[in-house]
Amino acid sequence: MRRPRVALTRRATALAATLSVALLAQGCATQETQGTREYLDEHTAATITVASKNLVFARGRPEYAVNARDYLTLVPVDVNRAGKHALYFYCYAWSTVDKRGTVESPGQFELVADGRQISLAPAATQPHDLGFGELPITAPARTYLTIVVPTTRETLQFLTRSQQVFALRTRDGLNERFDVWEDGREALGELLHGGSGTR
Image 1 (cartoon, helix red, strand yellow):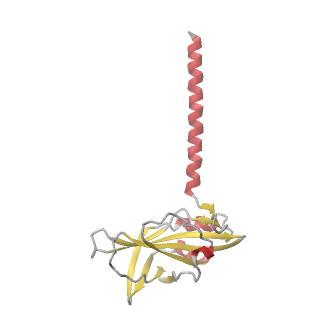
Image 2: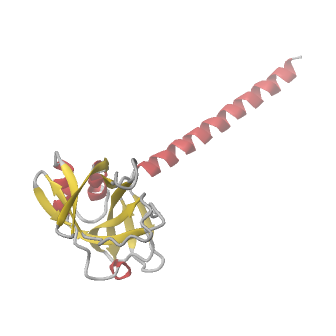
Image 3: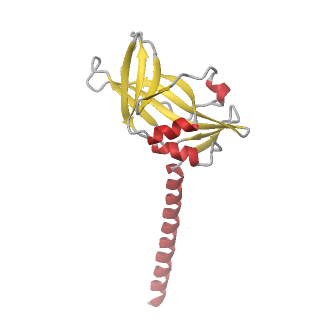
């Protein structure tokens, strides 16, 4: 009667070991997804490092619907091209409003951080020429406007320390304020200190 118990004990031990390995592997995978993400853009041969979180700003559009909003998503990225690094905000201007048949100017965006105005003027060249042959993250909507904005280490550090941050869109002579919807500014530090080469 002892042999079946020994076999049962061995099976239980083996099962426990298998579960432990699986949990350990799962824990490792979770740790990898919590930090910055790095990938090789196959179209441009640039190495792109993407911050683990984005900055998202929102502006209510009650004239369309109660929960209708326009959004501005800022994706902080580092582009490494043959050892030369550059920092950008890969921005998506998008909306939950169905604006088919409506003509709106895209306007000009800027951030306001503790009273300091930070222009979000797009780069003079196309995203592909900057190293982006593919989107760094999945676009948040079917319809969106892409704005790739050069930035600096000093600007990212300033944003990390700022107490109040919001975005402004200027169009048709009017300023439209976008307030923080998702505050991913802590990820800016990860991007700057994650071995991106911009130190």
